[in-house]
Amino acid sequence: MELPDYIKNRSWEEFLPDGLTVDLELPKNMSLIDVWKYRGENFPDQVVMDFFGKEFNTKQLDVLTRRFAAVLKDLGVKKGDIVALWLPNCPQFSIAYYAAIYLGATLTAISPLFTGRELAYQIEDSGASILVTMDRFVREYEKVAEKISLNKVIILNIMGEEITVPETDIITHYDKLMDKYQEPLEFEVKINPKEDIAIIQYTGGTTGLPKGACLSHYNVVSMLWAIKQTTDYMIENYLKENIKGLSILPWYHIYGQACELLMGCLVGSKAYILPSFDLQRIAEVIKKWRPNMLLGVPTMFVNILNSPHMKDVDMTCLKFANCGAGALPDELALEWERRTGFRMAEGYGLSETSTGAITATIWSKLKRGSVGHPFTNTLVGIVNENLEFVPIGEEGEIVISGPQVMVGYHNRPEENKLVFFEAGGYKWLRTGDYGRLDNEYYLFLLDRIKDLIKYKGHSVYPREIEEVLYEHPAIQECAVIGVPDPMKGENIKAFVLLKTESKGKVSEEDIIQFAKENLAAYKYPREIEFVRSLPKSGVGKILRRALREKEIKKLEK
Image (tube, rainbow, N blue to C red):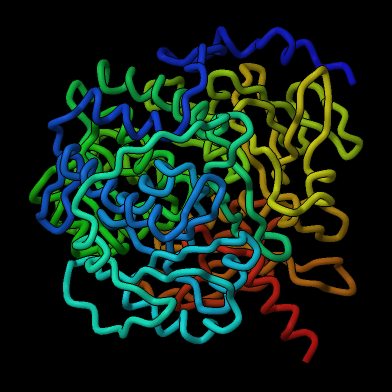
């Protein structure tokens, strides 16, 4: 299939912001082991983590990591084995992560919010043999312990307190193991970056059961180097100081892993680590330590801005904030600028692209609603249902080609046939997202293909309606879905979480009327339901799918 000229010629090059190029030479044969070693070679004495006031420098973490590598090696972990981490953000997550990488093992990280059933699915699907987790999660593990095949479960307490969980043939204690292995392991393993899998990253399961995206060392390193290009520019020209990040993105997710845990090695940043999304603690860290960077998803930023804990907090230290893993509402972006004095950057990517593909930097030309231009070495296009590239300005499915695109889904040959296609000598990934490119090659996201609403034959994008609803001063969060309707195809329903001060003062009809005044007659929601909370993924993305399933069950009764 022939590629359009704008892709062949990389026509977006003339519109790229400073510090971003269409091509970047990637380090040859670099693995994630080398990424980890980079910090020791370039920032040996840097304090890189602060966990509730306890600081860790590069040398301390290096020793702890290689001691834990000795533990894993003695437990039989070798190149290609799968090690599962079921932990919140904490220093031990980093130690276990890099220890496994150091041995050439493959990581799969599990959401701290998972139940035993969800844990069992990921362990069995990935084929993990070792699980590193914390004492608080043992009760969920025990519910499914007999259903999963693990050689060892290593239990720790993230605050270093005594563990009361009894040891068994399978369960062993992190602290006791670390006491046994005082000598850091010296180890060399040969990695083939393009073939060896570093991470099996599970998707949120927007369609069916979660799938494991197999990311090679080359996939992840190429993405890190692309992010480093813009980060180096930002540090030198924008921040003009080292990064001090408030780390609230969960590290089990590829967004947190790539942009915080791994990128920290390449830029020598310091992270103030929080194990949970604790708004009181976030406010305290901002007041006391004045971090200059915060990465998050829309719901995180919404909750920060609306939290009573943040009411009188000076947020002007947060010079750089990036929103990803969900569309950034215009109202949220404007309110963030008002509170901090700085624009918010936005990015777009997937687990399948090692986190990134598109970026809108804070110094690029501002186009509200756009996620920007492709990262270096990345191609982006729009295709129709026949996988034919459409002209600029037309809507269709976003497709991506680049070195960061996954090897494929773990043990899913049929899924791989559906998600990849060849065109113009490149392997392309179908994202499942609707979008369009404008005449300056800025990408605008429209919606997930599965979330598109068909109302009386009209195509309605939930995101467009949500953008309007977010402009209502009483609304804190919202989600719009299509509900099956025999006459209309689908009816439009909005789930709304009101701000505390507006509860009982604003009616469903008030919201409908507001939407009517700001949307075409076929787009406004016909039904409003006020809710106490909205279902979210572990990373904070609102799950429209869960709302649709709930509505369908209601109709079936």
